[in-house]
Amino acid sequence: MRPLAVTVLVHACLAALQFAAAWATGSAGITASAVHVSIGSAAHFFALGGIWLSTRPADRQHPYGYERFESLSALVIGMLLLAAVALIAAIAVPRLLQPESLERTTWGAVLMAGSAAANGGLFVWLREVGERLSSQILRSEAVHALADALAALAVVVGLAASGAGLLWVDPLVALALGAFVAWRAWSVIRTAAAVLTDVAPVDLELVRSTAARVAGVVDCHAVRSRGEAGRARVDLHIHVDPELTVREAHAIAQTVQERVIEELEGVVEVLVHVGGASR
Image (cartoon, rainbow, N blue to C red; front, side, top):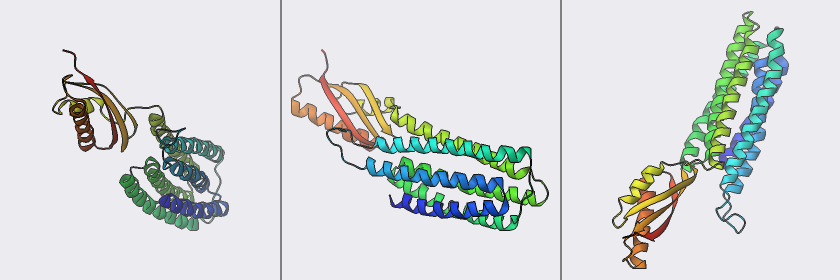
């Protein structure tokens, strides 16, 4: 929650400054960047809500917990980014067809360079925190910050070119930013959809072979996995000698659980179903 709150504050300040710079310079590139950052700031509120909901404990209505609300909020963020693409295209295309001269390009370039530096710092910080917490949203926000930094640098190039008389470069940079945001939106939507549609986050054959190596396991099958990378849940069936006692079979199942969690990175829960092997 704290990293996202900081990100919201930083992006809100940058969006305000960039809109002021866009008004002062008339730059389509700065306007596109401001739109992108503004919609990104709005998306952060969905991210905060998703993280807050995902940390709630399981209850009667949600026996598996609320973790998927984080992926659902990431899906909403992806849709908001697609809206940003449409707005950027609506701004940049007319400017590309009828280029206009810009004003105060030096001032605009300095401000955008500062925006790039601020977003670069956010990228490094959010990436580290996201990896440490295995958070899908924080990892996606880190990429978002990197995209903002690169976009700001591209706008600086466009302003410099416009100052040299190449008026078409600024709206072209805006369109390139729109394409980058579209790629970003697709990445977020694809990742969130994979979790929501139960794409296996771990190698199921590796799970099976790991369980099969445990002493006492005769066979392992019906392996399934759900969740996201870093927080995967696995369930599987094992067969043991039917002459074993319940306590002995339970001990083997417990060992399978521990072995899979220990050897497969990102697995946080394993459910083992035990059956007797046919003779």
